[in-house]
Every structure is written in structure tokens, then in C-alpha cells.
Image (cartoon, rainbow over all chains, first blue to last red):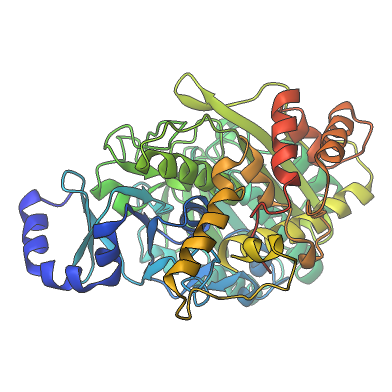
Length: 426
Length: 121
């Protein structure tokens, strides 16, 4: 956390600039809500706030010119899709909305003074808020796995944030000779996108089967069970027999150290050498959550399940991957659903109304192969201070299903992506 | 603003009005009309999540749009999903998570023609 003195110094130095900034002028006369982070959670929340109360001054702080979406980025790695299909510019964002503009500030939020309710930006200015919504996503922990730091990720890509890392892993697979060994290492829970590593394994297997059939894929897993496991395993047996080897925790799957120089992954049961190593390291809430004091010792952010307000700092709400979502997985759909529920609570709170009890939905599709999709869904509500699953609802696609159902789910996956990105970024 | 226009006779909506100078009286009138229309703030619990999959009809998605359905029709479909009478991929699993009253409230909100449920394509 930045020191109070440093923050106050920043405030004094930047008063003139902050007062001149348009959002600050608006914030003086209207309740001002700041949203930090323009991903599925933050961009959804900024828009939902405007739809709920057009008189709210809403400011979105996001330094990037475009968002690179993670859902479907595994298809880019497998050469099935271009990165441009994952890229969503914020160009139209500020001008969007028949309910009025959202002020878009293209800077990085680097600190929060929770007491004075101000967000500090990377240019030294700061901006006040009535309520703050943090949607920073995840940071990869480059301190959690010995040998795996940022430099190592240039050799053993994580590809867990879409963009250059996605293309690096794709290019490494393309350059690998037939007969090579690809190793994918999976961290313990919790991490962004629980079924993501297994969708990735599936699509890499599809690439190997069609382009480099003598190759092999090993999944070194720090867990003994995973999301949609029975569906994935049945599909692997059917589509990629002998190609994928899944090594669970109990069989020595947990990676304890890596050596990027030799592309070696060390486990408690021995060493594995890879031609291509995709190391997905442990994660935590994005840096701004740490500096705002809303992350606990787990690295994630405890929240009230009705309002998404931080359990640690008043008037700061946390949504999406950074939040401790209880039974809700860290998925794009969860982030979008949480954003709308949080926006409803924030819109009520700034008008001193009582927030309603939310009900949330998650749906998550995985591609096992082109034209072969599986899904999991859930319905959630606040219970005992957490977001809990509504019993009797939710679950995965049927285990025994004709190919027509898998094809339909693959088509739905594509169209879900088109719809949600249109709602959030379009 | 788009909704205000629709209410007054269904002319095709102008995409941006507030960007141009508008007399104060007109702004006040439009604001009053918008405030009286259903908005996301009035959405029944769970209803706002629907637009994560169900987009505007103009998107031509394989996932059907919820535009233009009567509340009774939506309730009946949710019943059919819940009982298994209507085959589904995910909606059967989701429908089981909502009570009669919740389903009715969601359907009533979704059926309101003015409801701003999703972005325009």
C-alpha cells in the first residue's frame, strides 16, 4: 500500500490538474462513481451504472486502447482464429449510450486513498469518488513458483492474459517439430477460468493431431479434480486417444520449480523436459486491489455478496476475477453478471436506498474441438455471507449426448461470445 | 431518449440527441419520460444476467433474442425448460434455479417493450 504521506503529496501536487479534468467537475455536483478496469467486469459495470441512473457521473479508468478477450484465446493458440477476433477497441465506448456518456480516462490507476476517497493515476493526478468499483482482474504471481518470473514467461509462456503471450505460445507450437513434447502446468485453485487449461489442452491436442500427430501433450496439474472433468476426459478418449496425458496432484502433477534455460519442469516425482512449456502460474487480484487494501492474505478480495462492497474498505466494491466470488467461478460471464448486480447496489447506495438481494447466473462454454462444445452453468444467491449455489440448479452438459448436442454447444459458445462482447464493448 | 420517441409514435430513433445543443425544457421533458420507463434499476433479481447470452434480435444469434415476447410466453417456456418438456443445452439447468415468483418477475420485466436490456448492435 502506498504511504499516506505519498498520496497526500500527490493530491497537493495535482489539485489544479484534477479540478480541470471534466469528470472531477461533474463529480462536484453529482454523485461520482469511478470504475477501475475495462474488462468484462469493469466495462459492464460502467455501462450498467449509466443504464440504472443516467444522472450518475460514471468514470471508467482504463489505460489500454483496446481490450484483448481471454475467452476463445485458446482457439488462437491452436491456429483456429486470429487475434483480431479477440480485440475490442474502446473507441466507441465513451460516446456510447443513449443514457449519457461515460467519462473514459486512459490512464493507469496506481493507488487509492480509501480514507479521502481518491484514486491516484500514473501521471500523478488524482480523482475523487463517492463510490469506487475495482475490476482489476488477475495479476500473475511471479514470486510463487521458483524459477518462473517475468523473464521466464518469455520462454515458457503463460498465455493467461490474451495478447503477445497468446501469440508466443501459438508460434512456439507452430515451430515445434513433429514428435515434440508439449507440457502444460496448471496451478492450484483458485485461478482465472477453471476449465481454461483443459480447453487449452483440448485445442492444442486438436492442433497436434492434425498437424504434428507424433507429438504428445502432458498436463501437470496441482489438483486431483477439475471443472467439467468427466466431459473433457470422455472427449479426449474419443477424439485424441493416447495424445493427452493428465498427471494429477496425487501422481506427482504439482510443479514445484521450473528451469527456463532447459525448459524443465520439476515435480515432487521427477523432472519433465518440454519442447514447448506452457506454465500457468498462481494468480492473485490485480495490483490496484493490493494497494487499495481490499485484498486479504489469500491475494483475493473478500466482498459482501449483496453489494460487492469490500469487507476491508468502505465505499470500495470489487467485482470479477479479483473478488472472492464464493461458489461463482472466475469467468467472463460471472464478471458480467456480477457487474450488473454491483451496479444495481451502487446505484441504490449513492441515492441512499437499500440494495436488493441479487441473483446471479454463470454460463461457461469450452471447446474440445472445432464444432465440439461443452458447458457448465450455475445460479447463485447470497447465503451465509458468500455467493452460494442455488441447489437443484446448474451443472454440466450431459455426459452421454449425441454429436449434434456438442455441435450446438459449440455454435452457442461462438454466439455467446459475439453477444456478450457486443453488450460490453460494442 | 429512444424509448421516449417510441412512446410518442414509433418514429425511427435518432442515435445521438444530447450531443447537439437541446433546449433545457426539452431535456427536462425527456429526462422525465426516461425516468418513468423501466430501467435496469427495476430489473427483477437475475433478469439483468439474461443479456449475457440473449442479445438483440438484430445480432441474429443462434441463441434466441428475448425481444418481443409476452410475459406469459416467457413463463411458459421457463416451465417447459424446468420440466424437461422443452429440450435445452443450458436453459434447463438455469430455469431450475428460479422460483415461480422469481420467474414471473423476470418475465414481466423482460416483456416490457421499453426495457433497455442490452446494447444495440
